Amino acid sequence: MAEGVKYVYPDGTLALDGISFEINDGERVAFVGANGAGKTTLLLALNGILRGEGIVRIHGVAVEPRNMKTIRRMVGIVFQNPDDQLFCPTALDDVMFGPLNMGLSRKEAAAKAHKALADVGLCGLGGKSPFHLSHGQKKRAALATVLSMDCSVLAFDEPTSGLDPKGRKETIKLIGGLDGALILATHDFDMVGELCDRVIIILNGKIAADGTPAAILSDSALLAASGLA
Image (cartoon, rainbow, N blue to C red; front, top):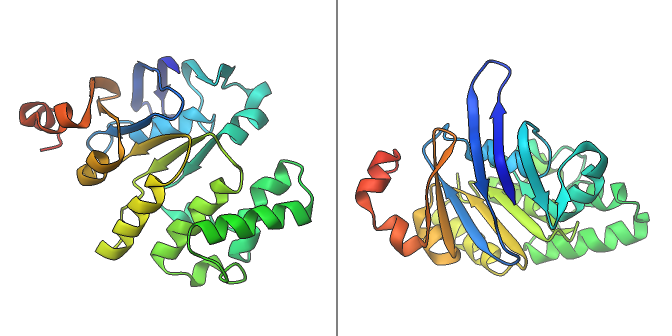
C-alpha cells in the first residue's frame, strides 16, 4: 500500500507526486509510463532504497528505517541493469549475499543459493564471475539474488530489456511461474498482457490510469497522451 508518496531528487526533479495505490497478495501489476515518468523511483521506494514523503506499507509494515531488515526480506527488487546488482567474485557469492545478511549459516545460504540458481536455469554456473556471464545470464543471476531471499513481493525494472527474442521468451515464462505479488515496471506491453492482472499508467509522477490490461492497452488515446503510443 502506498499513500501520498512524493519524492524529489536532490537536483529538484519531482519524480513522484502524491501517488497512492494498493496491491493485493498475489496480484500481478504493471506500472507503465514514458521514460522519466517515475516508475523506477516508485520501485525503489517500495523497499526503502529511496525515501520521500508519504506512507508505504508492505503487509502492514511501514517502510521506515527501524523496519528495513523486515521490509527487505519481504520485497525483492530486480534492477534493469544486472551490473547494478551483481558485485561479488562469483554468481554464487552474489546469490548467497542476501541469505547471509539475514543471519543464515553459510551452509543454509549456499543451499538457498544453489536452489535459486537452478530455478533460473543457471545450475552449474555459480562458480563463474558474474562479469563473464552473458547479459541474459546476468539478468537471471540478478533474479536469483532475490529468489534466495524468499521474498513475498517481487519488483522488476524492465525485466526484458536488452534480451534477444529467445531470452525474452524464457524470462517471461520464468517470471510467470513465480509465486507472490509481482510488480513490473516495463514498456513491454506484450509481456504485460500475458502476465499481469492490472496496469497502472504513471505520467509526470502521478497515476494517470488504473485498470485491466485489456482496457488500458486498447485505449490508444490514453496511451498517446501518456507518451506510450
